[in-house]
Length: 140
Image 1 (cartoon, rainbow, N blue to C red):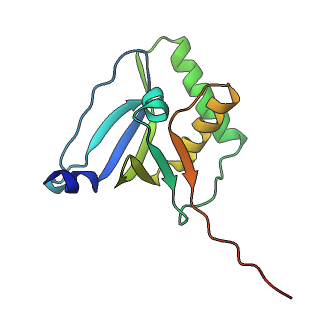
Image 2: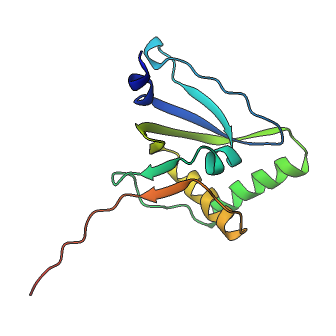
């Protein structure tokens, strides 16, 4: 697989909260394994100036109070129990090139964490964008 093919593969990212440097694990998808990278929240949102695009075919944001509260409580419990690493979930993305990743799965969690970080006033370097259909103007 050459460098261009490497950029076009689907990647699966494990969301973790970590108090230490995370390891990177990458495997070749063509060998019946998917590329897997373990990243911290800080690396996902402030890593290498990436843009995560939620494509138009993804469902709208639908998490409600129960899902959001459960995520925040899980993170809090992990922090207070001083676990060195806590698995939050997965993010499946397609690397479109130029540090742009199309989100295939995990957009609800990605969006929620983005909103929580913003509410806490934590600056985010990477972008999270949402593709939308163009509005059609109707003339009467």
